[in-house]
Length: 379
Image (cartoon, rainbow, N blue to C red; front, side):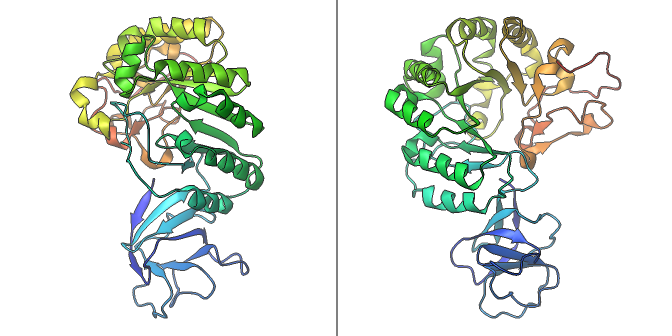
């Protein structure tokens, strides 16, 4: 999540609030005022953010920052006692997510966010967070960790989103094994959300290979979860992180998906983010994405030719074969999406996914600017 550093005062516990520049003179109790000229913390607001250092301290929470241009009316942030301001929701972003839990029952060798073992229940905090989101928000992700580890609280979150932000689509990233319990899958269906998709990672058509990558013997539970979700007509996406240990069998894996999971709404082939456990296991995982283009191309076109919907996430257009560029998506969250010097002047830059910030050094050696488009890249 995006964050900036300031200096906080009179803040002993984390303060959460919705950013305002003072447009609303009523109902201030959940809002944080941002003002260049505040000479003291303003009455009624949960906190004040300012650039003035000579503020009159009246015992109210406030934070001094260098720049307020990073804030937008309607953003939701947390200010902690160390002066860190963490953006939990950005009103102009399409990539807002709710962290249901940081616990997980897998330990994937390329996980960008290693799980923790114990934590305080995040559900009460997340319910308040959802209530602060703009009611016109179009999409919200629920992620982790593994979101189903909060059990029935997952359905409470979905119901709360449905009530507070009725237009929002929901995307849940889950390993799927909890849905092997048919009753649990049915409870999800009973939420009757109008636009919900569950994205489930699968890493091989060979059970032992998938199990080794996720660090648990759960391949068949994930498969059963997929079938149970399909039974209750839930929309499902599959996610495949491509690295040294998964790329060779991509064509066979695509064929396996077509024959066994024809009901999935989409299949996403994802370039790896080199942080967390992926960074720890870099030598065992890293392959230049250019070097698996043949396998990726065959897998993508096999699915597309058979009427399924393949997508390519996190990939740079300049290194992809031209006939599969149209399947690439702008998929990297705003706050960690960058371009590098080689991208300057590229005609595809506006359409390209760019790079994870963590991949600034670990990226393809074949990156180059494209000076003209030889063919239409839309599907």
